[in-house]
Amino acid sequence: MDAIETIFTRKSVRDFTDHRISDEDLNTILKAGMSGPSCVNCREWTFLVVRNKEKLAQMADANGRYAAPLKGADVGVLVCGDMERAHKPDTGYWVIDESIACQNMILAANALGIGSVWLGTYPVMSRVKAQSELFHLPE
Image (tube, rainbow, N blue to C red; front, side, top):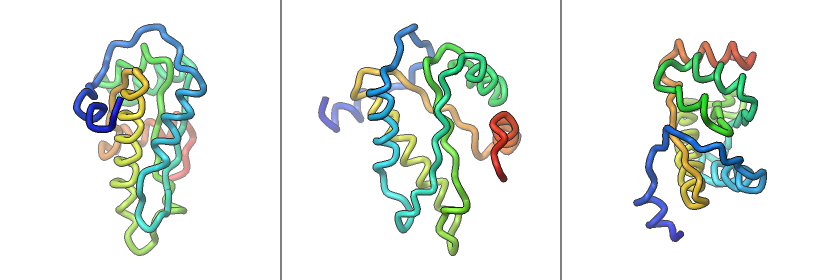
């Protein structure tokens, strides 16, 4: 699938099959997330990859009803901004950088024939706090 077709055919998938995503495809998707630009190449993203069904359900519950698709997913990726690596004069760019990473991952998934959906956590701080507590993340 070429890049333009991948962009134009991408859609949010909220009902998943029981198909297992191969480690190779998952690795490709994660590499796509890391390949995007970031503010002065800080690359301040951290990806938490979750395949455990119980943990996926906890992530969904922590994020609210719109995150219910996680309960049927084979894998979930929580994209976090690592403020230790963020551009110190302008730390707010992390939001843009992580958004680019997410977009690249969902486009890569589409190109591989894998359905995906972007489930927002930030900027709803109650969701951020719930995910942080679930994974014992630093502030």
